[in-house]
Length: 98
View (cartoon, helix red, strand yellow):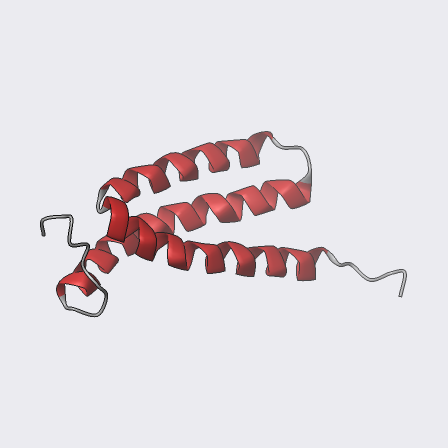
């Protein structure tokens, strides 16, 4: 048991958690901010990707990289969420023009 490497399982769990967090972030972000949320995802992605290059801890660096590229993926998902809202699959924000 002492020879087991838990990094793979831990990174899998962290990746699962990060991806799980981004799903509602995209939905709520589009609802309240619309396309502006794409800029927030871009900023978060750039910052965390740069931090992943600087951090010396392998686990932390990989976690930041997963977060950064999940942010970049979120940009694509924001535009797809806009289309899903137009199709009526998600509610429109009544305070915003479409």
